[in-house]
Amino acid sequence: MIVKLLKGVLLAGILLLSSCRQSSFHLERVEGQLITIDSVFDQAPDQRYVNVLKPYKTTVDSVMNRVIGICEVTLKADRPESTLSNLVADVMRDAATRVQEKPADMGLVNVGGIRNILTAGEITCGNVYEVLPFENILCVVSLKGSDLKQLFEEIAKSNGEGVSGVQLQITADGKLESATINNRPVDDEKIYTIATIDYLADGNDNMMALQKAQERKCIENGTIRDIFMDYVEQQTKAGKKITARMEGRITVKPK
Image (cartoon, rainbow, N blue to C red; front, side):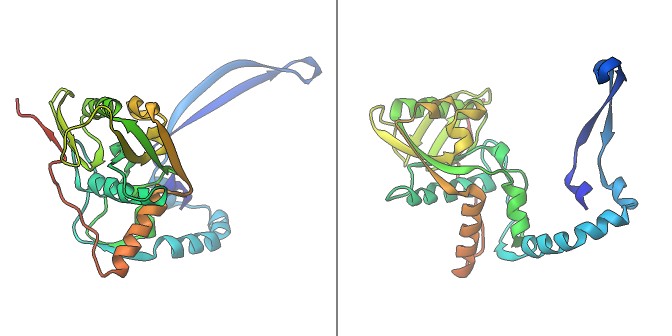
């Protein structure tokens, strides 16, 4: 049902207007109330609309329910590090080969952009849409080492994001203690490449350092979701299950 897609709270505003001469109107008052949209509405569906939507629902279900792989263990996204954020960051880092000759030095995805878990068992197209619902595209940005250090500080301040290719130690109050990239200290003058999403490349989620990019290349004809779905299907063709593990990419320094 469509209402199942409308989870959360809908703000309904009722505007009461009084008419004046010459068909003009002015606002008299505004009233509002919160209406919860949940499964209660599905208990008495309007059959007319059910019939209208039925052929479309059948088509959508046939696409979304297609099994594209198997998840070996349940994968979740969390801070400071998690299996699912590690996996997505790895996929993005490797996908940088679509715009350059090799994987990026670092992969970066915001934990808030991963909106569901991958449960152990079959992975459907619908599952991937639930995990990565936004229309974000892949961007590879080039950062000077000194600016990369600022990015690490911003990641620490957020208490961790999904990363690949780096190891960060942070404090419980969001400060950066130490950082390496490709198992080496950051060279202030070297140019590093970061595979991320356009949303973060624009400086959102307080990732302001990415706005200092020396260069930015984006894949315009595919979303991160498409890239991740391709990854799952390729792994499946190779006879592999989808999995990830904790690797100490971001650790919190003991007090």
